[in-house]
Length: 104
Image (cartoon, rainbow, N blue to C red):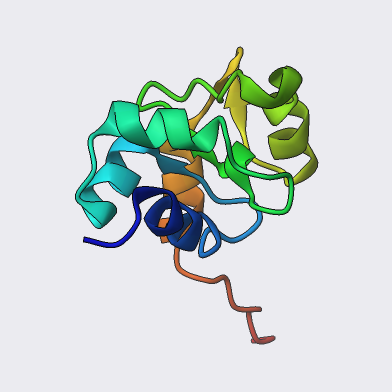
């Protein structure tokens, strides 16, 4: 098996701005346990988008001095209260692109 930290780093680097993945999704992708993913996220360097990895209930990570909510908000990630609004985020990205209507 690949080094667990390297596996989490690799997946984290694929998450584009404005998107998130849960600890469980990364665990599934890497073959790790979600808690193991959480521990590794707390150790990720600032150059890895650690703030895009959240809990299944939408709670952002609390590591790195609790800066994840502001970093996610700067990327236009929707929130409902203190949690990422996963439903709104998923619906927004699943909607077909809008096309301009031609004049009649």
